[in-house]
Length: 255
Ligand code: PGA
Image (cartoon, rainbow, N blue to C red):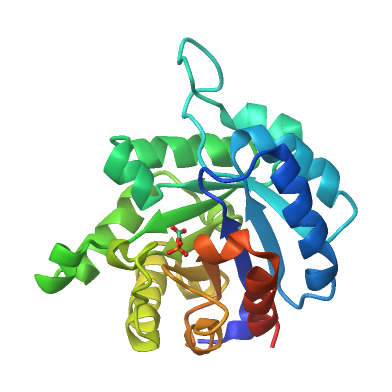
């Protein structure tokens, strides 16, 4: 496995945080701190902040993502946002299948697959989230659960399209809990995800796929997690809301 084959990507998942003035404040603080980053840097904002974030990051090395999209291009889906709507705004990335969507909003492997299909069709770069619950880990079925989520999400996705994707391994028990997976646990499951991708698309495509770890990654633990051979970046929740903390993780990924 060779890390040089793929870019490191640090993405902030702001979740349901930040008004437009707060978006301005955070991005203005962040821009100079990450201007020299040696990795890709993405901020995934609430829908209402996307336009402001795009304007504030124009001409910088910061990329903008959304946190979900619907599977239809348009239609009678009150309250939803489509992938073409995001693409038209200039949004590049979209988080899909986050465990909070699965847990609170009825997201299933099947709906994640449909949303992923729509995102790819619209030219977006999906960040596909997978991860086991604590019960599943304790039952010893982490590998099966994560492999199943990856395979189900990637149904109908071509190798060329995989080249536009990022997979984020986020153990549910580590998200927002302050309880991080050990570097060994993170590395093991990210390695397994790469094996699954290799089985579906061949080793070269799998070697080119950035795989992030997410779940209480912070300025202190980032370097150790990112040193794992199959951990190519991070999807950062809480620590992405503070410019200095997020910048420290970007710096750790730039080494
Ligand atoms: P956390 O969230 O860093 O706050 O644990 C990660 C995520 O849910 O993407």
